Length: 300
Length: 36
Image 1: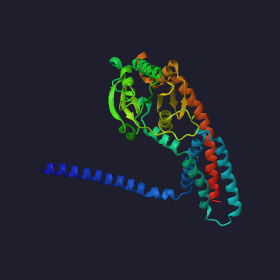
Image 2 (image 1 turned 180 degrees about the vertical axis):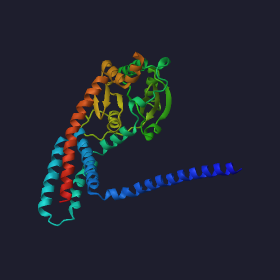
Image 3 (image 1 turned 90 degrees about the vertical axis):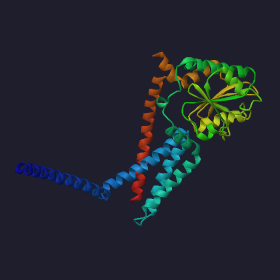
Image 4 (image 1 turned 45 degrees about the horizontal axis):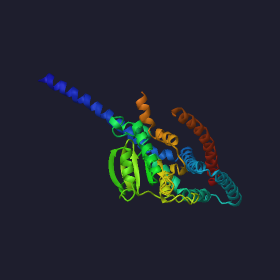
């Protein structure tokens, strides 16, 4: 019995040591957490964080300007900041009011955000959309669903509609479109076939006026309403269908294939720009770019 | 097509470095003015 008590006492004593050790570890962690706000008092960290924030703000603004071919504005932006900065230094003798100067670049940044609101919207959609290699195409490569068949069927449908002057708009979306657009149409979720595409766009049918969304190797929905492009440089002979086809590519990373109802001309819109008079070779190239993952998968 | 994408990515990277240097310069300048 005595031995039993002795061994129990030993175990308790050992555990106590662990508890004490644990407490000291917790104490260290608590000290570390307490030291975080103190670290921010050091000028090195404050300077680094301020410069980093300004850098990110300026870099994003400049990259928006550069991507939208507004190189002149980059120069104006730089000169504007430099000139106003020098004026501010020359005029401002009182210390402690330096933060007011921040409103000058901020004013310019807000102006850029207002001017390029559509492009910023597209950036947000692109980053929130899935990357191409993360997208699972529905039932990829099975039966009639493989990419080559899809490409042939879409081209056949487009050419038939072009021949008969049937207006059509097809959106090739490799990522999810905004829910508002998908909900504006009728969900279909069918295999791609030229007969189905032509039937949907046949005049006087309920779905012929909207856009058809092709997601991967499936027709996702039809009769969808798209945002119209507000661009002024679009030729006057292009109607609402073309404006819708261009409008959607301005904000979201998709490709639109448009058949004109008046002339039967097939156009391809990508990134807010339209290529007219698309022949079967151009269509095939565009569709191959859309289905490149499936095509690579098949060649393996 | 993959190779084309890689090349254009490299070019884009070099071009974005120029932009980064400009942005960093402006950030430092604004910071200096703010703390002058």
